[in-house]
Amino acid sequence: MSEIRGDIEVAKDNQSQDAMIYPETEMLKERLEWFQDLKLGVIFHYGLYAQAGIVESWQLSEEDVWAREGREFREDFTQLQLDYWNLVSEFNPVDLDTKKWAEICKKAGFKYAIFTTKHHDGFNMFNTLESEYKVGGKLSPFKNRDILQEVFDAFREEGLGIGAYYSKADWYSPYYWLEDGKVKGRRASYDTAEHPEIWAKYVNFVHEQIKEITHNYGNVDLLWLDGGWCGQGKEDLQMDRMAEIAREKNPELIMVDRMMGGRHENYVTPERKIPDLEEIPSKVWESNIPIGNDWGYVPSDKFKSSQQLLETLIDVVSKGGNLILGVGPTPQGTFTEEETAILTEIGAWIDVYGEGIYHTRAIAKNRANDWKLTFNKDGQTHYAFRSINAPVSEIFTLEELEATINDQIIDIATGKALTIQNGTHIVAADIVQPAIGSIGLKIIKK
Image 1 (spheres, rainbow, N blue to C red):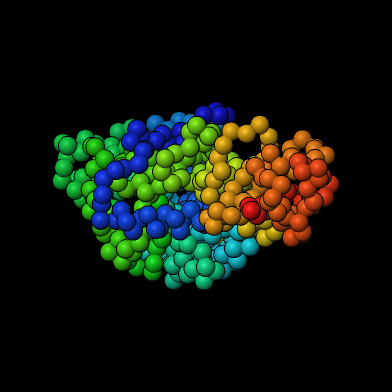
Image 2 (cartoon, helix red, strand yellow):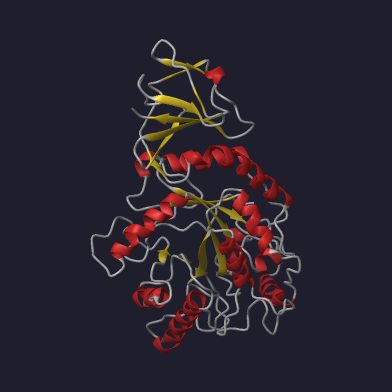
């Protein structure tokens, strides 16, 4: 199977801070501070691709050969598309319990949740009136329930921030992929300049769906727009107007027109990576990384360890970013046993050491040691983390911790102050070693 992934969006050149003043500029300053305090979120990719057990909906795009190599849903491409579209009649998550989802996620330490309302395949995971290609629609066996409403209600009840993922592209829409027999790729299958009347219908379709999501489901904190080839240029979606619609009922909405740059990419979203120090974005940022190899449910998926994910979290936070982890529920509507176990382990560590994660900011410097540092916004309380997999040390120096003899150094796990010996170092054996993750120290600056 090819190791090349075609689902990783490439950022546009205009990712830097926008000096223009917009009606939302002052609001966003406060809201992005709120967002940066959250640190850890979860993103759910859920739809027909879970039923198929394939890498989201990418196999439908004939030009995206990488998505089918070695794991085709069907060998014949025409049959693949036909069978995929018809999964609407099979997808029936009868074991869906969003309250349980929310309980697991809160215990795992997540502070916000983003749910896929529609991926590129055009299958809607909410009760849209713009299409019957939806869960709970005429073609669907899943009746009398609105999954998006259940997700939002359950996560709000647990106190998490609420986000909606929405793909600006829609391969099911007759206004995006024309039914003309031509080879289709991820973009609109026709020249929009030659057929402005068709494109106008698509723009209206997108705007109406954004209105439904942001008007019919209570307060939405984040609108996470995907499909970074769509929205500008030949696929102009009138983003200024879309933002106005989205904020009519959600005046403090953070909008993420990801990988597009400019006004409506309120924060940036490096995918499957942690920026190096020299690559840290000038905008507020959020690394997005799946718990497994794929975003959605794939039966053969291989999951990252809780140790790896905790090290990722600490690295991201110490550089000033947020982290969202991708979870792919099963066709029945449950988390996998592996995901549940990983989230439980992450939550156990965060329950002890979370004060050094949430509401902190970065101390992102090149340093010749294994410590990752953050500081509380009060400026007085600093935190230092070191992976349990780092090389064994008998002592830690104050210099490593960027601390002085006048500072008080506390083991977060015990709440006890550590003894500074000879004015220069701390004995490693005096610090509690957790089973996973990192040791954590709190440094009260004097």
